[in-house]
Image (cartoon, rainbow, N blue to C red):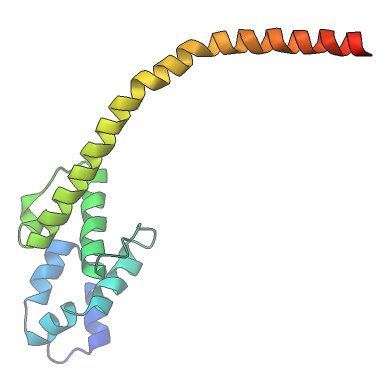
Length: 144
């Protein structure tokens, strides 16, 4: 590993998943130092998740962790303890994300009755609009 250049190490790591990357980063001082750089995680993000929605308040590594977690959930996995338990920051970010999703779900539940009421009232409003349109046409005919 000491023979490889920094660019070679980046190239090797660019397609590794998070769990494999953590193992790779713990190989020696050189890989550990490289993996501590925010630029390394930014590079991995650009290569593996070019369309990821990034949170500007998070480090590139934290954004990478979230992108990886979203990929796992999209593929049908639930919260997995294998890769992410090694990183307490992931657990914190995951908990925050779950809290936000719960808040969104609660808001959607609150909105549902209002949406149903709007749908229920729509025929009434359409009827009133038709009446007003008819009245406007009649008034226009009288004025002309």
